[in-house]
Length: 228
Length: 303
Ligand SMILES: Nc1ncnc2c1ncn2[C@@H]1O[C@H](COP(=O)(O)OP(=O)(O)O)[C@@H](O)[C@H]1O
Ligand SMILES: [Mg+2]
Image 1: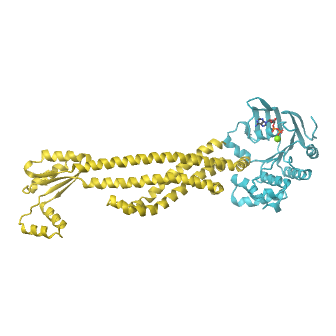
Image 2 (image 1 turned 180 degrees about the horizontal axis):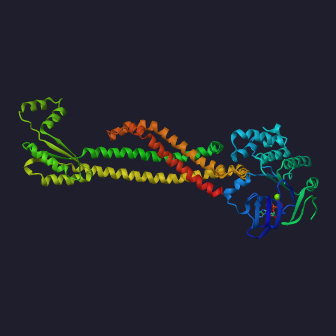
Image 3 (image 1 turned 30 degrees about the horizontal axis):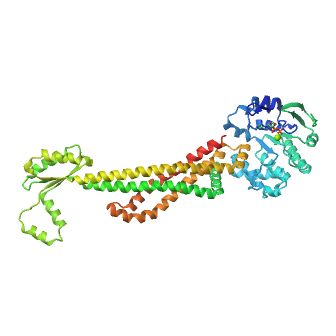
């Protein structure tokens, strides 16, 4: 489903190498954690995957599409099959939870009559049906992140990428968010999670790709976070 | 499809409303441009009509001798009609001339009495000749002076002064239109810059929405469309405002226009040209809006 082939990424005209010689493949329905300390290159991998950046060398494939060479015009189609979640939630402050989730469907061109059902189903899945009318500032961090997850899932993407979704959360909220990710994965959606939280990775006990200084130093099927 | 158009319009109005103060200021600038254009259109119509009414009035008149036989007069008429530059030749016989004269002086008893006392019609027959262009009048006058048999002619009358008036009026109208258009273009450039700036601020204040749109795979039409839509909204609103505001102004100045150009009814002209004026104003204002927003969007919202 996802292939990184000899990917390297340099910033500042080659003066800084964020990723070097990255190779991995992710199969449908996998739950993969990409781990490593801050600055290891985790977010760069995510940005390459959703076409926000292009690799300096190598190829990034998503399904039949080569994201790394794709025309910008075609990216929206790919992104509609990827749900993205970020550390800082990135909800629109002037919209309620419901509207934030619905917004993603609107701009993806989903017909009006389908939107309500899809939004409610998605909020239900993250356990926030009762906060549908609340605005982001009325939600706890964990709740805000779950609204962001509802938004990421609402269009039934094939892939969810979560870039440090628990970075701002306390352990309890972290557990909630991870639980929802596992649920989504159980429903058949591929999940890529980046984190530097050892406990999260250890508890998951799924595939772990460990980065250090832009290199993959470990890629194991049922992994623990090990100090590099 | 309709869903998307509906949403596009909705988002456009949202960004319009979100910066209503700025939108208002932007529209004032566009309005200024449109008002100058409206002035040019109306002034142009008045000027054209003034010129036309003067041009229609001037002609060359050939007065025949009282004893000139009608068949020879008609032969001259046919010759003149054969000239390329001639638009229209009107023949007024001696009888018709007398009738016209009487009609014009019905209230003047001395004249009617004097006419009644004469047994002979004292008036001569004439040809009134209009040319296609006013510049051709002297040519026709020269032709009549030289080529019509002298014994038939009483007088060739042609007013040289009228041509000078027309030339001067044409020069004044052209000059004021050039000044108006330069002013309008200058203001239009200012308006493009102002709209550009407004759209830019719109992009800036919507940057969160825009990046979220990108992540969820919104197509370009949703990302760029609303900002183009902003330009279109400014255009339509200002064109509509300027047309509505013109109505009372037209009614107000129409009586004064009649003083200068007696056969020009500004109100009639305005209402018969309303659609055309409206469309022109929309073309100008939407043009300004679209051009600026396309520049802003292409510069700051690359895919
Ligand atoms: N746009 C950029 N320009 C320059 N350097 C960057 C840019 N983005 C990331 N980097 C650098 O690349 C390295 C990897 O960054 P990132 O992928 O964000 O790491 P992580 O998400 O693992 O913390 C970091 O050292 C970071 O400073
Ligand atoms: Mg990161």
